[in-house]
Length: 213
Image (cartoon, rainbow, N blue to C red):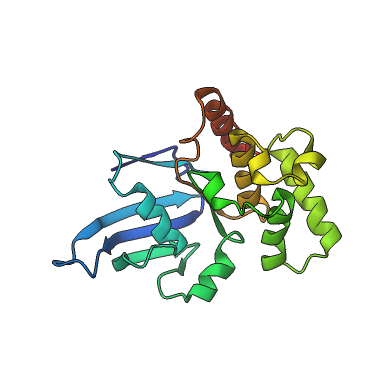
């Protein structure tokens, strides 16, 4: 696994992970899934993790988000978000940080979105969990972020269920949910894997546009 960056040396450090090691504690020999990973991300910077399947890209992302499955454990190192050490935090404290300070776009939106809730309600739910905004303001912001990610016919899509949308539209909903609270760090875990080539290009261009904006 390799890291590729666009340099912003003068910008403030948003994320710094040092000597990050993740192991399988219940497996004989306690093998390391990640070993000694170092990464620094500054404000406005894009860092790409490049590697073959199974090299640890998703595990690195999940460790930063505090979403590792029970079979994996951070065995060493540090993860700091704007100088705050994330590893000692409780699950409740990490839930407060997710979406509000650090957010993630997952590979497959159909597994990340709730199939029985309208997508507009799912975007509003993010704000309900992390803010005291009234319902009318939550709806206004949800519509605004949907427009920002270039979804067509926003009012119709707001009322739609995930299965009623195309793959590209579902991925744009995931991006809207990730960005609605303006987190300082956005992690994208292969967000175009399940999409056709044309839609992949559109989604990558959208992420780049939103970052620069």
